[in-house]
Image (cartoon, rainbow, N blue to C red; front, side, top):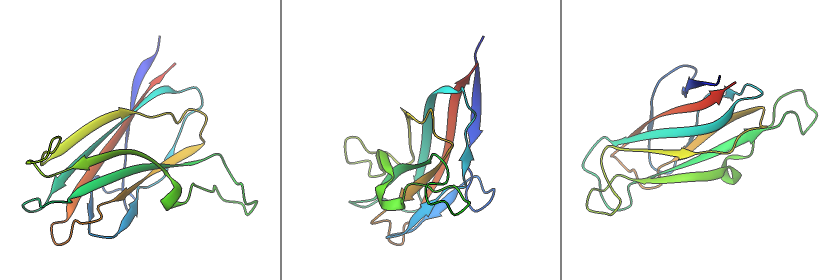
Amino acid sequence: MASIEEIAVTWDTGSASKSVTSATLVTSDVLALTAGDYDYQLQVSADNAGTPASGDLCIVSIARTTGDILGDSGDDYDTNEHAEQVMTLDTVAANTPGEDPVRKTVPVNISGAKGVRLVISCPQAASRNITVRARLSCQRP
């Protein structure tokens, strides 16, 4: 019988959250995947540190690796700007949808990947940094 496995997404070698500023791409620590796991779900929380203003979005992408495509002995991940966008979170409550804080869960197709990492950008966070947290869950046989 399958069980639900939860995988905490960490940042900067172990931190449970990351404060994202304007015009900055941040990446999570690497998440090694277990062969045979399936039905992955990604949940992300975004909390604006100030009063959200128009354009305060958090864009979440997944960068995968299938191994060492360059042949230089390390896993090679999708480049940050070409990682697959999986959700956009709007922290402006006046928008629909829009909430602060906001949490969203989406299914992600990462079966077959050797590992993944999240790539987060908040293009207009300005002085109102957005704190992100994430968790990945899956079914394990």
